[in-house]
Length: 60
Image (cartoon, rainbow, N blue to C red; front, top):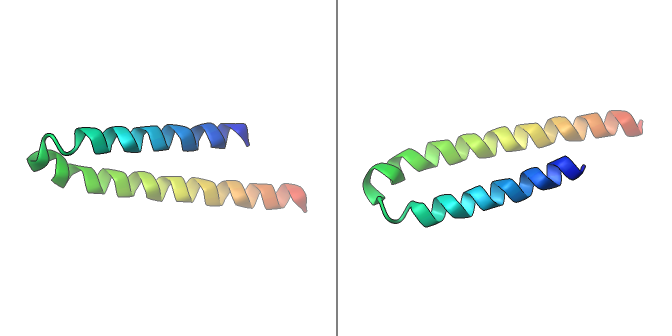
């Protein structure tokens, strides 16, 4: 549980960092960022879903 909390904090930090950096190089960065971010989010949600499944199995 603690690990996932740390992951969330890390993800939020990385997100704010990317947002700070993105506005400066608007051309190449903007077209490059969205796919990376969506991929990250997709991986994150997939990971959390798998974790939830494991939790449910342990509870049952």
